[in-house]
Image 1: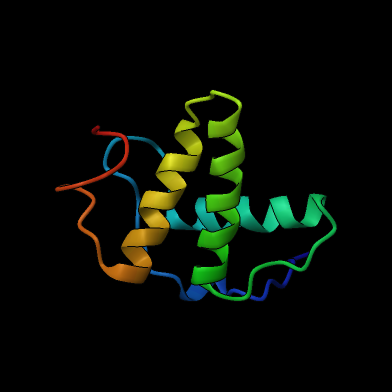
Image 2: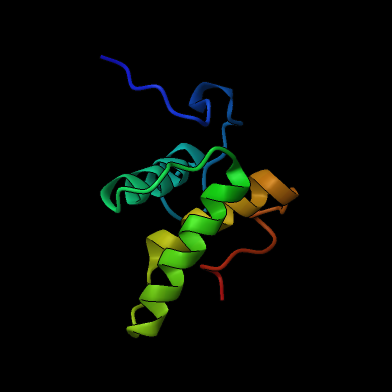
Length: 94
């Protein structure tokens, strides 16, 4: 059975991170999964998905963790929303 999400995953651009095996679809599913586990409404836009992952990243940073998956997800969401070139600048290079 196929799950319907508010964000149409089939309509997303085919973006992958240049340094790790992670895609834009993975990043969106990360945000959807987090909201589902927290029994909150899933994100309806890429901007909302980015806000969810930003909150998750803030929690990881507050506990002193270097959350590579979150950094990759934020890079991909930023690239999809703002057009950032991940080959020139990304959170995993710094």
